[in-house]
Amino acid sequence: MSKAQTANTDLIKRIIFTVFILLVYKFGTFVPIPGINSDVISKFFSSESANIFGMVNMFSGGALERMSIFALNIMPYITASIIMQLLTSMHKGLESLKKDGEKGRAKVNQYTRYLTILIAIFQAFGVYQALSSTGMSAFITNDNVYIWTTMVSLVGGTIILMWFGEKITTSGIGNGISLIIFVGIISSLPDTIIQMLDLSKKGVYSKFYVILFFIFFTCAIAFVCFFEKTQRKIKIQYPNSAMLRSSGNQDHSFLPLKINISGVIPPIFASSVLTFPVAIMQIFGVDIENSFMVSLLQRGGAVYLLLFAVMIIFFSYFYSSIVFNSQEVAGNLKKNNCFIFGIRPGTATSDYLDKIISKLTIFGSAYLIIICITPEIIVGKTAIPLYIGGTGVLIMVNVAIDLIAQIQSYNLANKYNSGNLRKRKLKVRMR
Image (tube, rainbow, N blue to C red; front, side, top):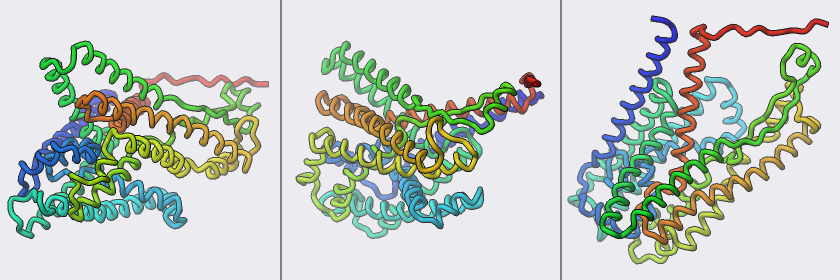
């Protein structure tokens, strides 16, 4: 068997392994935690107060609605990763540890796992308190043993998913954590399609209206793909440019900057902040059915949309300042004797990059607001059974783009290793 065939076989094995793990995960979303009264859970999620947890349920692929062992999904790990990223940017010890090669990054990952378990324990206890609150106990009896079965099931489910994600990353294809979220989001698409077709048959929506909706949804995905692939390229000049030009090589390169540099973190943070007050109320057994806070933060409401937009802008600027350190980039360019075309090295380069990032963040936050708020308005006005939302579309597109890029990189690396590429001659002009 040739090297190329071996490489293709390895890629197929990785894809099969990834699909198998994701199928096991999807099966686990239907395994309920012990002692749950499914009728009470169904009644709660059919009420309007459950809309506030729509995003959490979407990320879990409906596991929260079914109150399965994967109800917390991988969200504790995502929260822990973001917290560790924030701490790394503020704590010099963690920052130096992260820069200390593979060993340092492994240590940071270990701290992230420990923090994930602590967050999962806290959230699992909150879920138990919410399920066992007076007047709407979701357990078949009031036995205190269910506090342990609930916490062990939910925390154990999060740990299993964390292990699944790491195994996919190392032995499969793509980023395992992202793929788990991707499967959870995309699994709600069939329900949306089926319900739209059923409502069309019943005469609630006309066929033209349904076709228009799917065209709009397809255009939204295409718009997100275009925006996520768009970059602002900053020209970087290499040292010894005359020598590079004489040897037939380029004397410059580009520093690519995404327009949406903060990614999907701002809408996730914004949604988490908006759902936090209601979650705390449930933990302490407050009646949320008749709560003014719940009605004020109802999805699609004016107050909810306004706060959502403001928080997206805030977290866009906050997170972009963390993921892109202009001083560090300027320092690295100066160390390598490179410079941005027309800009002096050092402080001037850092200030120039800060201005570019600030302008990009304006466009990025406006783009996030349009993508995340438009579906909320459409659902609120038309009552379309759309479960994904703008944040789900963002995550779905980003994960798909990243997966395709990894498969292409894997194939390209295999082609180089197999020796099938022709050797390219380097022409050097002698003077």
